[in-house]
Image (tube, rainbow, N blue to C red; front, side, top):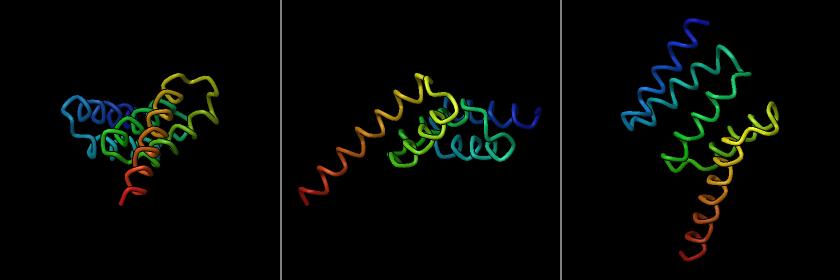
Length: 95
């Protein structure tokens, strides 16, 4: 549990510095230790949104909503992911 907290805090620090790839990696390490902790999924979804990885962000939010069906952050970040995916589809259609 101590290792989990340490990794999560490192991930949070990377987010504060704008280092989203590194933060996502730390949150992924957390998930190997605890797959039921929703905050690391919503945090990693934030990182994916910042990295324009909308499908990955949506998947993390979907996972959270299977565990906590009323998680507001997961709903919000999933909506942002869907928005990003729609913009990408429109841009691809114009090519």
